[in-house]
Length: 315
Image (cartoon, rainbow, N blue to C red; front, side):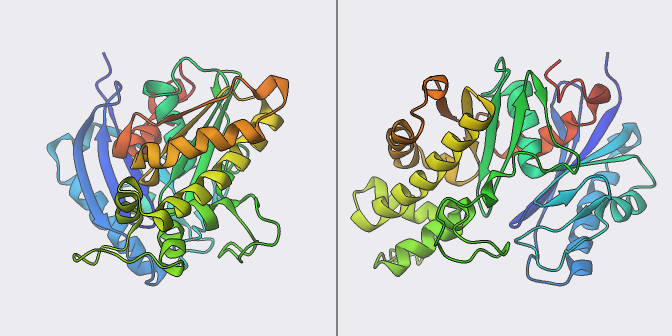
């Protein structure tokens, strides 16, 4: 019986979550702080340290044998650094070193947040039983990860499958990453909301101008809101079809906040995907919502280190 635990961190542009996770993927202890994404690097790190401190205050902390981190990227697992596009204070930030110091020198494994979600979905979620899968997180940013030939494939720096920063609009808007027309610039939650506002959509009396509110308006039939989600769906479809053509994936799993929008997103996405995924060997491609919900990042970060990585590999 697995008695040791993994301390897991899920670091994104909106929140920093932590948990103590057992060998079955059950989160036994939780902690969370908002990400001070626009502050300097040390301020962001203090929020991470607060999460670690809250976990360390648990009586179960003594059973933690390692730490898994799923971070917004790009990450460099070989150097232990992160440079999240949506956290400008972290550029080449030595996250592994700082986390190890805060956690009493426990061993640390770093992967991108998209890879973490992929590990979770392949282990316990919508990609379970699929040998070739793309899993995406569509939220404040857009990330992803790959399972090929039945194994998680993070790549040499931990960024393989980082689909949010491939260009699907060659003359599109500049992206904070430095490129143009990236999937993230078209399909992330903030950009769905931005596009709707720019085209005349207005929030209700509560003033909520987030992508969640745009999704609600789209479900109610607001044409501007519908169009903003259709544009996001087109960007995702182009990226998914391209990935399928390159790597012969047979399923794409979409999670994150935007992924919870339901048929407002998945209806046009499946329709448009049929127009892009036309080659014979990608026509069987399916697109499904993620199943792991908001726990995916933590479970996947733990999966990367549990049982020597066997869980992450789907073993």
